[in-house]
Image 1: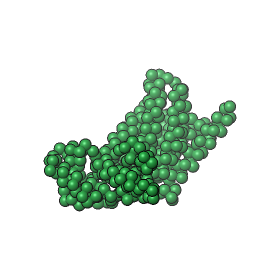
Image 2: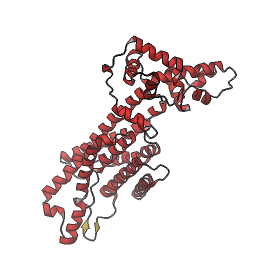
Image 3: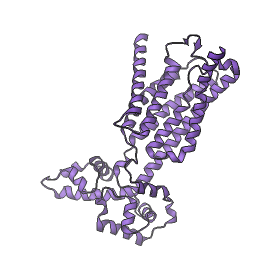
Image 4: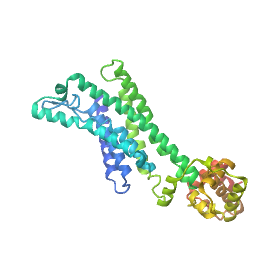
Amino acid sequence: MDKIASVIIWVIIIQGVFLGFTYIFSKKSKSRANKILGLFLLAFVFEALSSEFIPYDYIGNYLFADYFGLPEVKLFFPALFLNYILEKLGRVSAYKNYLRLNYLFALLIFCLTPLNVLFHIAFDTRIREVLGVGLTNDIFMTSQYCAFILTVAAFLISIVETYRYRKMVQNEFSDFGMLQINWLWQFIFILFPIILLWGLELTYIISGGTGPSGYLSITWLFVFIFLYFFSFKAYRNPNLFEQMPGGIRKQIGKRNTDDEKHPCSQENSARIISEMETHRFYLNEELTLHSFAKEINMSSRLISSCINKKMGFNFNEWVNNYRVENALQMIRSDEKNMLSIEGIGSDSGFKSRSAMYAAFKKRLGHSPGFYRNN
């Protein structure tokens, strides 16, 4: 059984290395985000290999198991994870200095291993003998605690920024597909059990535990699930704002989301509704709050305030409700079923079949096909 388990572990590790390099060097899905994802995955594989599964204790008389005998990579986990999420959300610039400090700290701890090798080759000694066991242990454990705290921070920042993205899309865009980000939520939340088990492991150490705890093997189980399933799903999805026109992106960045400063009157609400229904702007699948505001010559902040406060919807819901009603009329008037559902969706302003089905489910509780037969 031990031999079988060992073979399985090594297959998993080798596959992790393969996936990591695939993410980094893929030409089909080439992006900075996927390169970061590949480095993140390789860091996890290296940590598993060096802390649990490396088959040798020595090269010559150089001891791997010693403090900083191998590069310490845990501090790269939060930096690479958060960097990937922010890259997908187009928010790297907002955390540029934070990421730089995180990477610098990780690199300083990482460089203790080359220093240890230098001491070994030049002076036949080790870092712990130069600095003393107590200080070396303090440096090592401090790096572990910092890695854990920074990982928790990366997890929380990722949640906040992803929620911010979702809220912004709801109030800025009519493209329902932009809200289909379950893959990103899954990628973020698979980190939660890893953080929890990691925290239990550190608590075990702080309370005086020695040797590996029972939490460690369970932690690696979650890590491998994370590596091979959720990372691949994340790898296949493009950056969320990849196809957004630069002008719109700049407008969003500058826009003040405080709608309280732009109170909406009943007259303004009536005009917004009238303009939408008269000119049927919702039939444009690329419609955004910015483009709609430009068409009717009204402040986008004022429109947003009216839709949110007076009508009880966000911009995405409001526009897609018109599209659903338009599609529903077309389905019911097409008594001989001459038109395809996809064609009806496209003619109603939906960018894709999935966007149409999602909007129907949200608005009416049924798929478009349900109304074709009723």
